[in-house]
Every structure is written in C-alpha cells, then in structure tokens.
Length: 435
Image 1 (cartoon, helix red, strand yellow):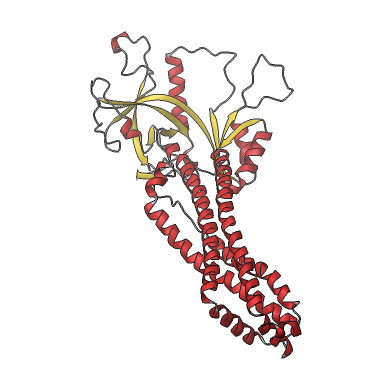
Image 2 (cartoon, helix red, strand yellow):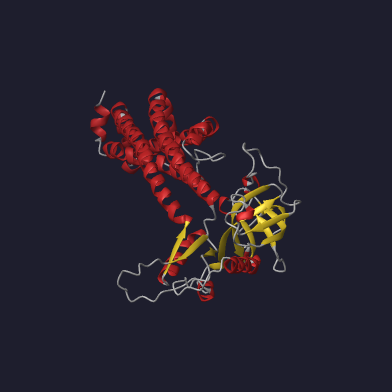
C-alpha cells in the first residue's frame, strides 16, 4: 500500500463516520484552544509587567550606591569603597557597560515669576545623556559648553504653584520662554524674607530643553552640568557656614548609574559591581519577581488547558478503538489481499494524527479570534488589574502556533498508538469470520 492509497483510505474512513469524527475533533479544538488562550494570557501578563516597569525607568540601567555599614558593628575586614572618580573608572572597565553617569543631587527651588516649585537638581555629564536615553519633547539636550543651563523633566511644569494663593490653580508657566531663577534656599516661599539670617544666592538659568513625559525616572527633576551644581552646593555650604567635619562622607557622588548594552547582561554587570563592594539595584530585580508571578499564573492556566487536551486524547483513543470493532472484517480482508501489519498500523496512526491536526488547526484559528475579542473588550479589565493602557491582555507568539499544531498532531499519534497495535494483532481469519 503506497502513501497515496494510505491517505485516501484514511480520509475516506474519517469522512464515513462524520459525526464521530466531528465530535472527536471538537474535543481537540477545545483542548488546543484552551492551552493557547491560557498561555497567551500569561504572555500578555509578562509583557504588561515589562511595559509597566519600563515606564518607571530603563531596564538596562543599574543604580549604584555606597554600601551602608554600622560603625558600632565589628569590622568584617573588607575595605570600605566610595563613589568617586576611581569607582567611575572601575565601572567603565566592566564588559557590556556602555556609559557611566556619576550623579550629584541637591534640592532647590525654581522660581518663575509668582510661581515656584521645590525639586531635585541633578548634576550630570552632558556627554552621556543620549546613552542614558534622555529624549526631549522641546528644545535640546545639554551640551558640554553649557553654563547655568538646565533641562527640565517632562512633568516639572505641572508642579509649579503660587505659595501666596489660598486655592490651587493650574500654573501658567512656559519653561522655554520664561525667565527662571534657581535658589538652594530650603525655606524659600515659606519664610519671611526679612527674617532670613542666611544670604542664599540666586542663579539665573537658561533652559535648553524639556524631556518627554513617558519616562517616570526623569520626569520630576532638573538636570544641569555637573560643574554648575557643584558650584551651587559649595556656595550654599559657604552661606550656611558649614565647617569641614571628620565624619563627612568620602563619597564624591550620591549615586552612580551604569548603562548596560543589553537587558540580558544586566544581572552579570550588577553582580560584578556588587563584588567590588557596592550596593547595586536595577528595575530588573523587580521585573524578575513579577515574571516569576506571571510564570506561576501561566503554569496554572496552562494546566487547565492541558486537562482539556487530555480529555480530547482519551476521546481519540476511544474513537479509534470503536473503529476497530466496526472495521474488524475490513481489516481482515486488507490483510488477506496483501496489506502488511505495518500498513494497518500506519493507517490507524494517520487517521488519529489527522484528527489531532484538524483539531489543532481549527483550535489555532479559534484562539486568534478569542485573543482578538479578549484584547478588544477586555481593556477595561486590564486597566483594573493594573496592566496599563495599550497593553494587550492576550499575546500569541508565532512559536506557540507551530508548537500547538505539532503537539496536537503528536497527541493524535500517541492516542492512536494503542488502537493501531490492536488492529495489527488481529488475526486475519478471525477478522473475516466476524459479522
């Protein structure tokens, strides 16, 4: 029996028992659809976590801090490390590090006419802003030649307020056009100027640009050249008559951010930084925890779908066994006219594989339809669950389509193996005698 005859007979036998074939295929459709849709929700959940975390900041950025140690505790023998230029150099030497950004931060007040805002002022190296994915919605990024120039976070404009107003009103500020002043006076706007005992300086600044609003990490701060921020801090300490203290930190920077070339390399770079004696954190730490939760949910959902497919496999086995009883005489005749036991085996395996394959194909189509409906009408539920706007609840990767198709056909073959073996072992003479 050649392959064409085998295929023709297999399809003919399935078509001859249309209702039973349909019901069996339906079981596979339900099982395949259940697994695909359940797993797709898990993939959608993972993607939503990544999208949510990426809004908080870059997934390829590591924040480095000095390791805190309690002076009252006995020394462990490790050398104390500091965030200084030497640390910056050592971080740059680590493989996969794209850029290193040492940060000096202080708090100050930005004044725009009658409006003010109290906000972090961060000193930064202008040359690395593009490496750290600073993007402007208006204007430009800082240049190395800039002096007393600032780039504002995308949400800063909305934080301005009138300290003399009794009712809050939306501030009318235009950061790109207005004349702005910065002071590091911590009491500005809250105390009587005539009672001030400390003469804090005020600095006229130029605005180079305003950042986009989609990166929360950069949204609520003012970025200025490192030299300008150092100068303002030094003059503030001079005005406050701050004396050098032996307990003063030896760290030149509050923290250092390290940019890595790829998210997959963040963990390795983070471990190397920790081995140098520093504390290192990245959003990947939180993302990994979220992914673990998503994997657990995905496993539970996939298990529910697998039960449906197991029931379908039992249905295929039952269909093929019943087919043997109905076709016993036919099997005997096939053996008598020259069909080998291997041909009988192939015929039954082909029929069961076709049931699995048909069910898989229809299941994939139905899964895409259900995925579309879930994403279209389940958006409000997704927002309630905190997955965020614009994130799909159900995502079906291409590999899942091919995997489910192959798995459905494999389930069919496995389910048909026992009936095929039983058909092979039938005695031709006894089979022919069967009425």
